[in-house]
Amino acid sequence: MNYITQRLLTFPLVLLGVSLLVFFAIRLVPGDAIIAMLGTEAGLLTPAQRDSLAAYFGLDQPIIIQYGRWLAGLFEGNFGISVIYGKPVLEVILSRFPLTLELALLSMFIALAAGIPAGVFAATRADRPADLSVRIFAMLGQSTPSFVVGLLLIYFLSVVFRALPAMGTFTPLFEDPIGNLSQMILPAITLGLSFAAAVTRISRSAMLDVLSDDYVRTARSKGASQRDVVWRHALPNALIPVVTLSGVEFGYLLGGAVIVEQIFALPGLGRLTLDAISQRDYPLVQGSVLFIAFNFLVVNLLVDLAYAALDPRIRLGGK
Amino acid sequence: MQQLKGAIAAIARHPSGRIGAAIILIFLILAGLGAAGITPHNPLKQYVVDRLKPPSATYWFGTDLLGRDTFSRLMLGIGESFLIAFASVGIAATAGTLIGLFAAWWGHLWDGILMRIMDVLLAFPAILLALLIVAIQGPGVVTSITAIGIVYTPIFARVVRAPALALKAREFVEAAHTFGSSQRYILTRHLLLNLIAPLTVTITLALAWSLLTESGLSFLGLGSQPPAPSLGVMLAESKSMMTRAPWLMIFPGLTIMLAILGFNLFGDALRDILDPRTQGRES
Image 1 (cartoon, rainbow over the protein chains, first blue to last red):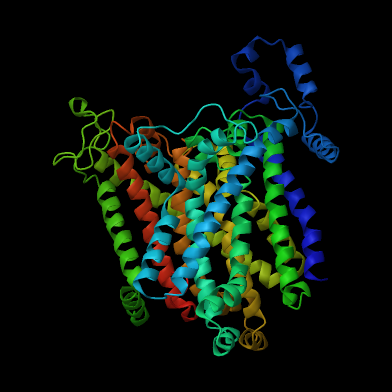
Image 2 (cartoon, chains in turn blue, red):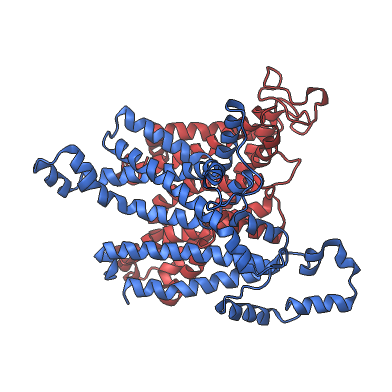
């Protein structure tokens, strides 16, 4: 069995595992779903009303049946009804997804635009002061938690420029691009910083590896200029590990950035899931966690397939 | 003993190893003093007249809204973060190593089942999986330890499985088989000994990730609970007062960053030393 078929076959299996884990895990959360839903008003319910509510949400069925029904619904695009919002789960998730997707794309753009040149710059000056300072910066970037970066950014903005980032209601990109970007830029920098640090480190080390390869030496001996050697001959090969890293990071970013969304008061997928967990909105937790894991797995599958397409050793599953 | 001396000398020769080790050591001393109750002030006591005081000779890192000494609270906070980090990485390393070893050793169906379970865990962003576990168990130190331990188990399983598979096929393991060594003997003597290098590196780096996840959880209010001083909680509380009392944000922020930096630097140095192939490449 070659690598690609193997990956394609395990994909639904892992997804099934995710669905099982999240379905049963959320039911281990102590507390009654109906009380969580109605708060103190649940105390006013007559037993008959309670039972009919439980029946409405399917909570009166054995747990295996509940799981089976949920799973069957998924195939029809029916993720259930969110208890908090009273709307279809998929609709709630999709209303939050554009923000998360935009934030992930912006952060990745920042990370690649800053990280790759920095990594190449450092690698071509290996062990000189310039290299050392890039490495120190990257190390610091990788060691600073996103909420420390976020708070520092807000602090400097409010002290130096006496302005606060636009918070509160979220402005969608297509309604007001400038208003939207002014809201998204700080969170994107916050998330992009440690991502950029990781990209810098990996592109530096990949570049160093490639620069000592025989084919680069051949290119040099042909008389290719330093610039040509670095950007045309070496960089394309050095980018392979960068692509892998970015894929994994991007996959995680698509899951929403709980902490950064919290700091900048952004209504993304991360906060949606956090709220759903704390309010025991079973259908919403199940739906959003599955959605997040699905995105992560798809992005990783695509990265792996792209990788396999580039590297015949993997494609043919030699080892 | 000789090997230990050699290892310490190698770390001391490596610039990032030196700095990383120094940072970790200083923090360990501060945490130890804090745990022993030797702090400049009582970390829980509210000096009501000295509320929101900037850093001074009396209060080195200033005081918070309730008049508590930030430096003393940081000492305790470091201790708690380190305790959670060491305990959770201990769990993750033990569980992950066992899973990785058995997956490689038994192979076939078991390998498939165990590693797919690890894939399922890896498909969750770390903080989300931890949140789910916190929701089940309720927030607290023990929950943070279990949650972070579970989150990082798959990484250890993967780190161990690949070299274990490669080693399993090597002649010396096969030779041990023909000599009639027991499975357990082969697993511990041959496989585990050869896994020490990748494991040490991963453990050090995992300590950094664990500190990151723990401070994130407590920043969200889902880690250790007040009034226990915790770095994440202190930072979260500082947000509303950041222009009036920036020291409440800057010192805990720097502390978390330095602690993570210490383990990252140390881990990088270990990787350079234990794997000469990557000398100076990754740092």
